[in-house]
Image (cartoon, rainbow, N blue to C red; front, top):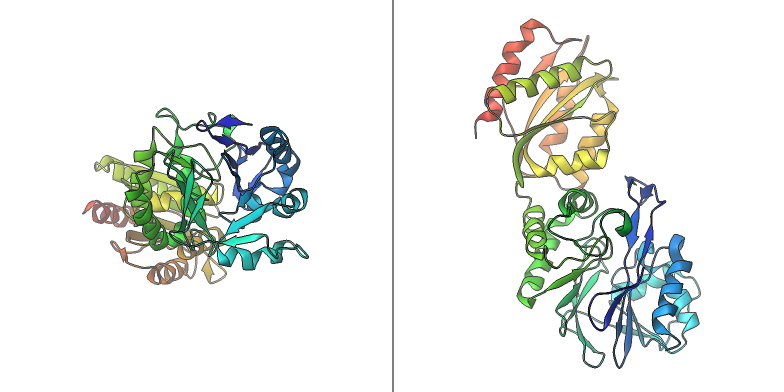
Length: 396
């Protein structure tokens, strides 16, 4: 797909609608876009390449826009293979091409392309460095650990466009999700949120530092490496990124995640949700960790301010779907939240102990109410404990 971003900037990215798992772990039922751009000026700059699965189509886009001209620069914002797979091919095809990247990216490049000849063909840039193309001037902003250490962004002063690397990206191929531009009618936040917390969630402090560089620039358009371009919805995207990266609560509500072997724990989780709704909880979301997309569960844990974990005991420990969920929250930096625990065990309940231990190592997580312990199934005698937990969860 070749589209105009402005008079001189072209979108030359490629959709992969057939991709089932992004990074071999995240379900992408609507595929994925690999975004790339070209600035046509006195000097021609190509900004990032594509994934190996879409390399041939991407090269066709490049050649179609160049129409026989020679590009001057290839700017690499991020070395991850879904954006840099064609770097070596471009250097070979265009002998006068100069590769522009951060010093860490240039050190990393031979790890992906053994034997590539870089001598005399690279330009290392850092914070505040510029690249003159003619009417367009690019300024570079380093963005380490958003979400790799070599990442940078670039800002085009003429058209006020920020090329944001993986930041502000989302899951989904463009042609499957509404086209090149995000509009006020586009449900951008849902898949952008799942993308952010699973890809960048651990690096909130680093995202905050980059936002502090970006906001004063007067950006009018954001061009990410995945997902649609942001212009009319730019303010809302910046607002959400500030909340997400500061680990604020986006939506008031309670998220109940359960992992149940034979249904008893799930029944108790649903009963707690029923009690909370009856008592006036503004929003209660329940998910079955055994059957739902783990990335969506991680997303919801970050979205809401309170988490209830309900799980069966297993091998003197914790049922694996819950262990996997809590481990993912830990490595993604889940924090500044309230949590409550429901455990189930037929002879020696152990799930509550493990869940409490896992929650205790997370930053600024406050346990709410008393742990509820079930014995095999939920019984009438358990209802007062669930009622008390519901009351505790509703106290601000």
